[in-house]
Amino acid sequence: MKVVALAGGVGGAKLAYGLAQALPAGNLTVIVNTGDDFEFFGLKVSPDLDTVCYTLAGIANPKTGWGRADETWHTLEGLEELGAPDWFRLGDRDLATHLERTRRLKNGQKLHQVTRDFCRAWGVEVAVFPMSDDPVPTQVKTDEGMLPFQEYFVRERCRPRVSGFIFQGADKARPAPGVKESIQDADMVVICPSNPWVSVDPILAVSPIREWLQEKTVLAVSPIIGSRAVKGPAAKMFREMGIEPSAFAVAGHYGSLLSGFVIDEEDREQVEEIQSAAWGSVSVCDTNTWMETEEERVRLAREVLAFGKTLI
Amino acid sequence: MKVVALAGGVGGAKLAYGLAQALPAGNLTVIVNTGDDFEFFGLKVSPDLDTVCYTLAGIANPKTGWGRADETWHTLEGLEELGAPDWFRLGDRDLATHLERTRRLKNGQKLHQVTRDFCRAWGVEVAVFPMSDDPVPTQVKTDEGMLPFQEYFVRERCRPRVSGFIFQGADKARPAPGVKESIQDADMVVICPSNPWVSVDPILAVSPIREWLQEKTVLAVSPIIGSRAVKGPAAKMFREMGIEPSAFAVAGHYGSLLSGFVIDEEDREQVEEIQSAAWGSVSVCDTNTWMETEEERVRLAREVLAFGKTLI
Image (cartoon, rainbow over all chains, first blue to last red):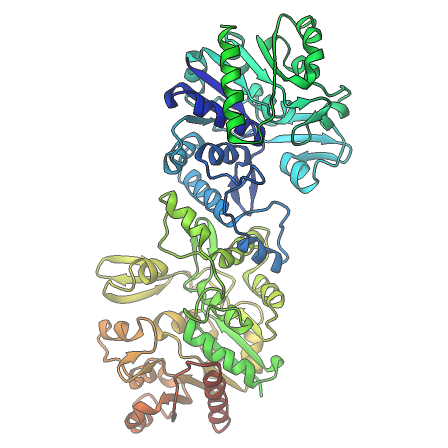
């Protein structure tokens, strides 16, 4: 069974890790949001891409979920000493990734090639693709004006009230080479429990990824349990966009794209509501969607795959 | 007494440190070679400038003389993991300097302003100027072709045989703001025991610095003791340029620019030869010029200043 996973940051990376354990390496492709890419000190930083690759490689920081394990912060200390911008926390080991990616991109390599080479160096066996080699920087419309994503997310700690999102350049961006083939070959596409607004929507905005997905069996795992996001600002964003945050709201967000939807058992009472909603027929599976341990990631991945199989 | 010191890397930085201890802060200006500046991973690296500033700030690596104290190498480890270029050893703390300098230069600050701000942040009270805000990259003519300085010096470890040096752009470069005033105000200019070919000559190549110096009392400290350089490839360079390395050869290199010359007591027998050489009248002082400890730096600095006073 060939599977494509769409992933953003920490939550997406965790399920991608579980899927990578549950499937033979050749059967999984992970397509990652790059809408949160930005430049810092002239370095090309791809936070979601790195989180996914570090997690798959087993070298992610186990405490934060992002950045590298056994990280030190001596460069950051040096920057602080000089009064330099320090709102984005560059770890010493993590910096190597940005330095070498920047060097390679300047030398003409494409982002998907850099990602492939880095994965090889880190021992990642599953295929990981950025959604596009072209820049699609997410801009967040807020009550304090338009903010580039990382400034909203990290510098302002998601404090400003959002009223919309622009995926700048999405109209001209093309899916990275390999994305089309992997989707077309897939028996199932899994939208990981990533933020629908700023992790998954940017991927869907790169045309014609959404059209390709409409031909496939697509299932999503809800990043919202109860009315809270497991991590990050997804629930806050739903609320500020005028929608009560819930698993139901997430299913509604993806609408007719979904064949199946996986929610936490805590939200079991929403099953019927989701199955009978106006946007079409969607099967719902409720289970424990928390992924604290590596075992929980793999268990959830196996459950998602088993559920998906019933929908093909 | 106002003093200007011309300095390159480790040896120059040590004497500059001694002079900084021996003089009131407002009375010393250090003008530093930037011919060894280069770009690595898109970062603007100024090795000599950093060595001088780190040394003056007391944050230089005491073992190597260059780089920072308490340094770690986690970024470098990450780069090696990715098969990235690693011939220039970027320390984690040192990296902050390059990142922030690069950011500021891109934002339009000039190198002398960046240097001033960094010195302030590091608590350096003496004035430190790059020789120029304009790039003057030293190119080394070798039997293996022309090599940018750091590739010759670090990557090739000074192995290729040299036949000349080009200070690219020196004809168009202007002295950094502040250099003219500090030289004109100086009672004495001290050429530190730096490599004459690749640390001091680049400074002298930025017109009209040499002309300004011709009006002043200039003394130099020999970086060569016996037939060996205290550190680095100076002796090898003299030899490959067809000149037997010695204190006498260094004096001859600077020629009529010198009013005074400080040599090591080991070379005492060269005093008369230097004083009676064809290039003009130069007074010679012989003393212990080794600077292993901080005390030795200060002692030598005081001796150089006392000797210089007799020449004004």
